[in-house]
Length: 347
Ligand code: 5AD
Ligand code: FES
Image (cartoon, rainbow, N blue to C red; front, side, top):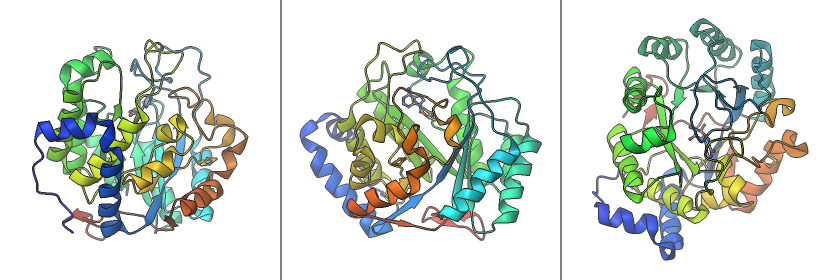
C-alpha cells in the first residue's frame, strides 16, 4: 500500500462520492481496508484540553464567538493546564491538544512555558496546539519550544463561502497563509472543514479536497456543521451525518497516510458517530480532558457530548466503545506515519 495516493480523481468522481447516498457503505469499506493496511486496527487518542473559551473572533457558526454574551467565559491557569496534562498522562494519553479561542491573554511566552513544562515532565508525549491564527514568528517560537503539531481548519477553500461564514475582519488569505507557514516551520499540520456549513456547495467541498492535496497535511479534521442557538446561523440545519461519513472515507482514500479523527461533532450528531467514523476510515479520537466544571462552557454547538455527569469517564467509556467496534486504543504519541520524530522531518 502506497502511503500517498498519486491517483487523480476528477471533479465528477468526487462529486458523485460526496453526493450519492447509495455509495456510503462501499466508500466506508474501501477506506477501512486502507486504514487497516497502514495503521492496522490501532486508534490513537489525544487528550483535549480546552483551556479558554474567550475569543476575539466572531465566526458566525461558532458558539463561543465574541458577540455571544450568553456564554460564561473561563480561562484555565497554567497550573490547571499542567494538572490536566498530568492526569492525562496517568490515564495513558501521550498526546495533549491545547485548544482555545483566540484569547489575547495568552502570550507566546506563556505558551512556550507551558509547552516546555509539559515536555520536561514527560519526554514521551507530543503536544498539539490549536490556538488559531498567529504570526510566523510566534508559530516558530512555539515549534522551537517543542510543540509538535498544530490544528487549524481552513473551514472552507472558497473565498466567497469564507466571507459568508466569517466577518470582514477575518481573512481567507491569512488563514491559508497560516497553514502554509505552519507546514514550512515543520509542524505536523492539521487542516479541515465542517460538512454542511451554511451556504456550502459540493464544489466548495471539492475545493477543500484540492487545497488539502496541495497542503498535504498530516492531520485532517472534519465534522458535521452543528447548529448553535445563540449564533446568527441559529436557523440553519445540522450537516448530514451520512455525507460526513462519506467524506471521512474520501479523505482516507485520497490521503492514506493521514491522521483523521472521528470528531466530537460526529459523536454528537449520532450516538454511534465516533464508532461509525472509525469504521469509515478515521483513526484518531480526541476525548475531552478539560476539568468537568468548564466543559459545558465550551459549547461550539448545541448538545455537545461529554459535558455532563459522564464527563469524567471519557477514557474508560471510549476504551469500551472502541473495543466493541473492533479497534484498539494504543498508548503512543501516534505520529503521522510519514514523520520521523527524531529529526522532526517528513518523508
Ligand atoms: N458546528 C460544528 N463545528 C463547529 N466548529 C465551530 N463551530 C462549529 C459548529 N457550530 C468547528 C470549526 C473549528 C473547530 C474547532 O470546531 O471547524 O475549526
Ligand atoms: Fe466522553 Fe463517552 S467519550 S463519556
